[in-house]
Amino acid sequence: MGLTLDYADGQTPLEDDEKEGLLIPVIATRSELDEFEQLNIEQAVQWTLGRSFKPDTIFTEAFIRTVHKRMFADVWAWAGGFRNSNKNIGIDKWQIPSQLKYLLDDTCFWYENNTYPPDEMALRFKHRLVSIHCFPNGNGRHSRLMADIVIEKIYRQPVFTWGAAQRLSLNDTRAAYLRALKAADTGNYDLLIRFARS
Image 1 (spheres, rainbow, N blue to C red):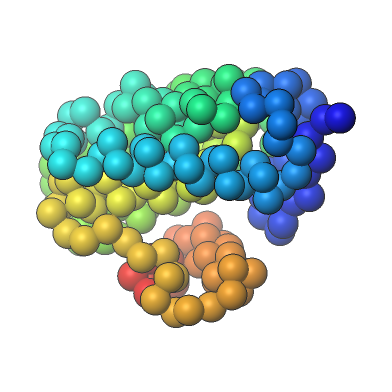
Image 2: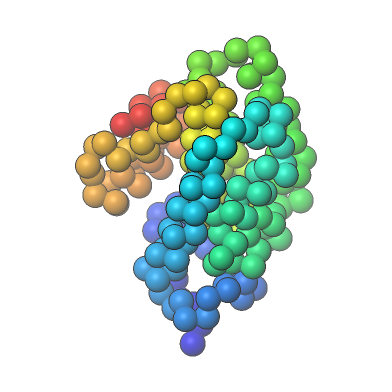
């Protein structure tokens, strides 16, 4: 019996060889997978607490990979590794290293030159990161944690709430998040900033 997954709007389907990277063979459904991934993600968040990370650490490929690995290594063998397949969203798999380098260089420039207010800078970084879609899965959750790390560790601001204060259903929260991302795709970050702080 293999892993059978239903995908919500905006979720990235896994290829069969990516599913073979599942480290917990008893997982068979989306809800079981979500539960185990959430436990792993909570461990990654705990790892960030009480640590100080400088911009020259955060804005590196190594750190991007490390955070993803810490979030998913208990569940997926490929955690922290760039995807080897093209997806329904994201750039071509071969462009990932170069596009990530451009993003990291741009973000360092934004930080050094105070190009954007802290929330906007963190969310522009998050948006570009999720648009690249570095990993087979978990890109949205990874990019949100990266934005939290940027806003908390670099700017000493509270982490984002990502719509939690609105007390919406999971489906409505996801729909609001996807609307905010689509607006950011057009260069309008207002919805994403409001959503992240709501």
